[in-house]
Length: 31
Length: 151
Figure 1 (cartoon, each protein chain N blue to C red):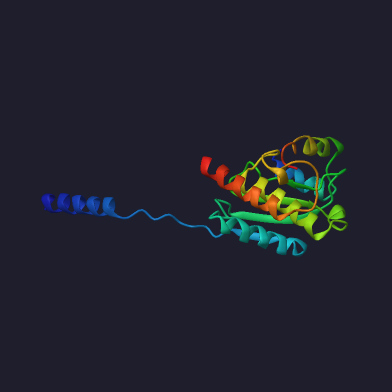
Figure 2: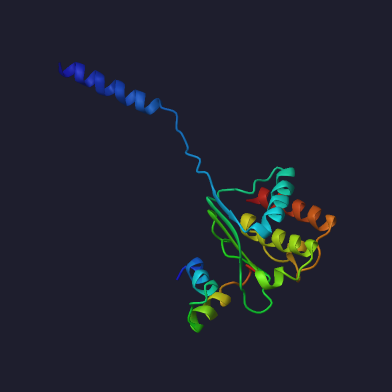
């Protein structure tokens, strides 16, 4: 899934725990 | 008659070949959270002072507030996308930061997202959030100029 889509799910609080973990894992170098 | 048609076709081909190429400039779409506007404008003014452009090739530019996990102060989601800037600032942390710390955070994330600048390339791109200084801004702008020159 595109990072921006994943971000939308996480930031609106509707991501599954797996999606949330995937999101934070992919943020390396972007924080 | 056939010669006439050929002449017209040749003429129209020549005309179409000699048309100057036009590139369509797309106006970027901006959305910046009201809390962050003054910091984004400061960043824009600073980068423009050294001949750089905050827009680059971006056609979508957003800086928003959001709830981020742990001690993440901000994220630059559009960092590897040349057409989009998508910065999210940690709203809970933002509330407790000083003016100079907020400015450091915004400059850090925009340097990532607008220019693709990586960690540890200069002081402001290293370590945690701390108050920005004039020296840090000067060093960042020098780094951005060199980085941009390299492409």
